[in-house]
Image 1 (cartoon, rainbow, N blue to C red):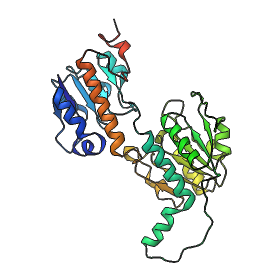
Image 2: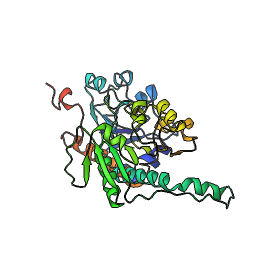
Image 3: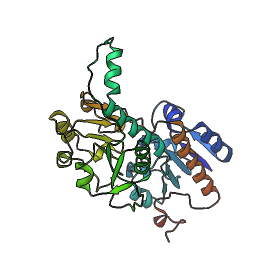
Image 4: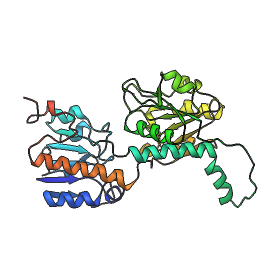
Length: 328
């Protein structure tokens, strides 16, 4: 079996795993993207000729016009949880099985959320920037300690749960809003959407990107937050109305924000928000760690092994629509 790994040199280094590459080479004929460019459109189609499986990176999108041309491909594996850039209906029409990976980065993203909260509470970046600029005169202002502070978490998936665990370790009060989750943690308060916004010192968005969560953090949502509260987004930019967030930040509706995602390039926070003095922004790097990247990469290896053994790969999305896996 021949497998195409779409990751270019940079993505291979930072978003996949050389251990996984070695494991694939032991079991399949592996074709790799030996360039510095992403494989998109016709370039992806050309590279996939003669390949039965594609393992795709986040830049190798799978729209209908691509899926219809992948005549040799039987399985399209997205090395991520998010498969919004893959047209699953088109893949199903082309009899291509689509697979995703599970979330192996809950620890990394959870830690990043706490880091943003700490920075906002303590003014670490602000103080460090003064020192970097050669200033040794610093205003003595009260900061916040996390112990006793209240964090509200929107979304209680693997990342939301990890944020809650870490917040509790800091002796914070934790409340959660997630209408789809069953929460039985005795130290976590289950609240409604308005309550998770209006009561906490910090509001963290950790919900999945779905049609229901699209721009859920809008002008009305920000108006319900306390004026001394901070907003943190480590989920996806499309959950936030950036114009409303900018207005909230510049007009004093909320105190500030910590952002790792946004509507900028490659899901990064927009520069117009990142430049604001009450914003701590990082360029979508919360999960940029060796451990979660290798976890997901090794899952793709296990999926390929399952295909070789004639078993349905884990995290298959559309087996009921693909002949040989569930469709008649």
